[in-house]
Image 1 (cartoon, helix red, strand yellow):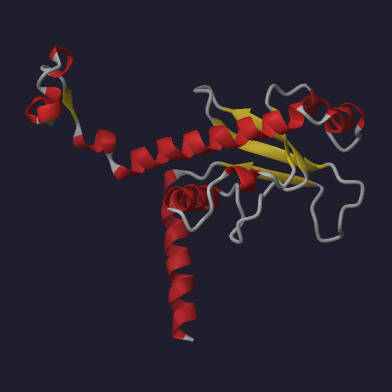
Image 2 (cartoon, one colour):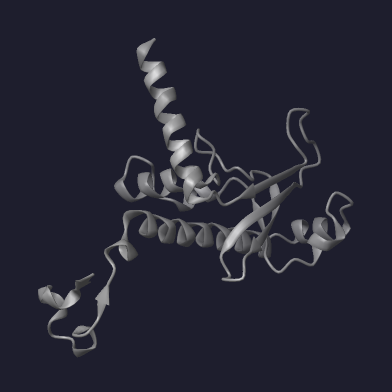
Length: 179
């Protein structure tokens, strides 16, 4: 354990004098998970706003036979209409690259930067801690292409899956460079 009192910016605060923190409490993985949870929350808030301002999509939810009855009453309903990317800074900026990279790692953006739930009504699912851990998307378009699924599912990857996916991507990049 390390005491925070040896850091100059904490010595003036009596609340921190006796506090001790395990170093792993603020590990890179823990911070990355918190940042990912915040980014996911912001994405779903944007989806909710999009749904709120689109009366035709609300009518679709109420009348569609594609959507199971149980989902129609879900507390977290949003819409993905390909405008999310306009709300995130460009990938070539530091903050935009970091945000887009994180959303790709969790699977809400595709590898090419498009929205995973593009053209879907999105039903988010929260865990007991109120964190979004999964979602179901139902396409709302009149014409759905043969190669597109009508229902998409997403779930937040576990920390171990991040490592496995990173290793797989590194291998792919290495193999591509070797060619």
